[in-house]
Length: 300
Image (cartoon, rainbow, N blue to C red; front, side, top):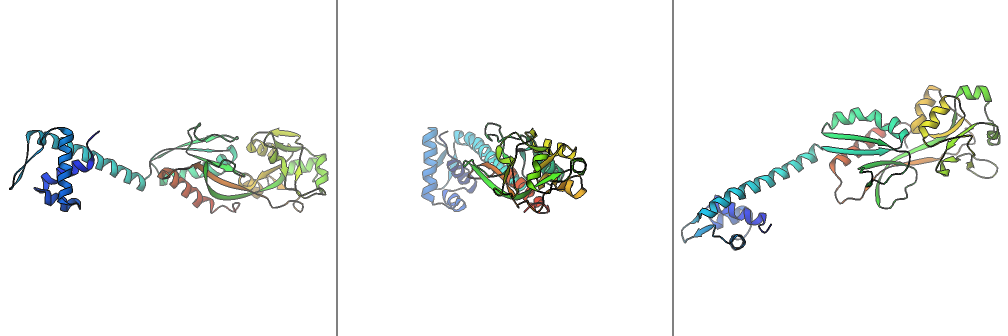
């Protein structure tokens, strides 16, 4: 497109104001600048749009026809700008959020109703994956990551941290006994992760160090699966407070080896690809999530 919006504005303001001087005052430009813009426009179109005399400016037939289209173009641009301003005030569009299954079920899902009530124009799409995903490949706007971040191409917004604890159900402990020392864990059924191995490092102080690398009796890829196994009495597990706080409050799970347990917290971050301007739908979700999580007792 050869024609610029500035040239279209110059034309419409000259016609509406009746003179180049009036148009210059309205647009905050010089009369010579407006005159040059009109000349450039006529040169590009290879037609005469205005007949200039010492007393008045008059549209030619071609000028009158072009003016109709120019007004339509400028009106469309104004409408588009207004829509973008409105989206900033009332965010809209699809928002794809990814999180590990436990965080999705225990933290995000309970917040959905309140978020949708506050931002009804946003279409939420919630996806769960217990492995690290590529945000671009999976067409994801925002992901919640638990643990240390490694991808430097992502921008992270810290949401807090969640403590991990060693837990078991009262049913299991009644059947197998409660371990009094870290060494006694060898006599118990231990529930652990298939990967990564770092999740099988329990924060237990023992004779050889401050962390215990367990050999799981039963493995699962999802923390929620391990939680359900622990609730069912399958063994002892080490999980984060964000998914077990309610279980501990109700007594469905109880903490084991409390005195030997170090206070270790997993950082929780919301991550997204670096942008010069963060979309309003992402920003409002982050703000809402931070606001709600600030009220959670398990979050630090």
